[in-house]
View (cartoon, rainbow over the protein chains, first blue to last red):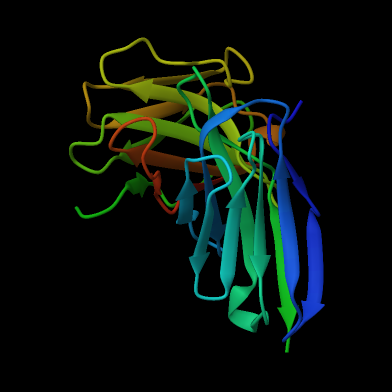
Length: 111
Length: 113
């Protein structure tokens, strides 16, 4: 059973379109992170959210942490081919120690 | 070094052999994680070390898997009597503490033939 469920698992869209990917759990997280992984590389951190309802922007990427700290979303505006990759959410369950990952959303942006 | 270093980068082994994978974390990072990533999949948690606390081994898939860490430095992941289903990329990550950013190595690609 996945503690963090990501959807969709695969997404292929055209350059210039907008998209949203989701990360959901039945558990409360003390913090949640989004990573991007490119082929042959390890994941690289994009953002950390800590406060319920928090919104963070990174250029064309907008990250939101749910009010109850059980879910998060990543919205990309005007997607570019360089956004292609595996997007992973990860979090630490409240009261726990280890960082757990979702199964990822594999995003392909077609020119 | 500046980042997390893993070795070897690639390992091909025969079924039934033992393999040892190494991870050198960023100096000063107290937390160290091992994950397994099968082709096209997400990250599967294996084991977590935090300082001098007992490691969280809850993700190890069988007793053929074990890991050690010497203090807050190098960690080794050992897979005994390898099976074909062990083929995957094994990723190591370290962080300053349990809630800060995890920095990943480039992984060891293990192929069991």
